[in-house]
Length: 371
Image 1 (cartoon, helix red, strand yellow):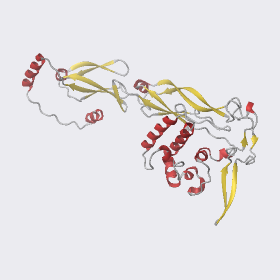
Image 2: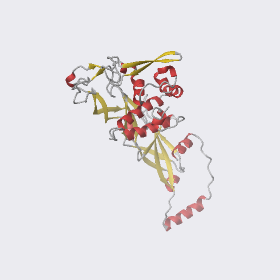
Image 3: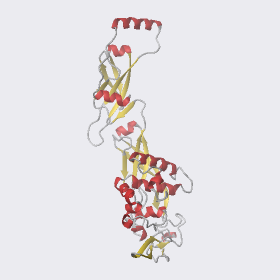
């Protein structure tokens, strides 16, 4: 199998690549070749190839079939045997996989699914928001009613295949006759050709369009969450349904809070005196108000204090997680002469402390995560 038809080669990963490696490679290439960003002539074709390869390799079942039988094993052709090419170029292989025999006979063809990334603030991810997303998709041409013919006229029957959409060649072999069926190159398997192209879409019956859509984001989503918007992908052909739009969410870092599952974490700095004597302090929340927290004397560095119900809403359920307040005892590195003298007196008064036992429980694991 050449690199042109090697799906792993398309994404630039090895055959032993993990699902995360495949996903990262896809994201990088999709950004590089997206038609909105890359105006090179081959960028759109490369972008489609990258998407097609990811559709197979991101699906465990399809990937297993591809690893065993190649692209024919995925689309069900040739009963998994290799060596019978006859499918034309790289694009033809993927056309057969995603469009099947419907394309060769001019039947309804579903549109391609699209992917887009939407960046959210932590507040938007926690509480939900409606945001506008702008992307490009293929839409039916209204000027020609998706026929490709000027003013919506009818196309003519392809003279190459007589409207069959496919060409059959019979070959003799040691085992008898072998029938090789390929899509007609002239009509691209549709059985009809455009004789008077529509000036708006240049005979394609569809055109690229910039689309704005409002997406409702529920409260509680996280980095990598995906929202499916039915029917907002590329338009189908010959009356086929439109594909879907999959919006992947990216959550920006917050200056004050970190997220841990359904909990929020706030780091509270304390000086040595505050930690030793205790303090009543107002803790900011993501809601915009404050919660009063009473800290007893002798607060240790890395302690975690829980404020119930001020974390992230449960995406599929009721209630919210908690706000975890982690204390940071900050030792000063610059002291005045008076402060140094007071510290010496305090050190003599306190003596040498004992080393506390290591906390290996829940709060210890929390500290490990954010250390």
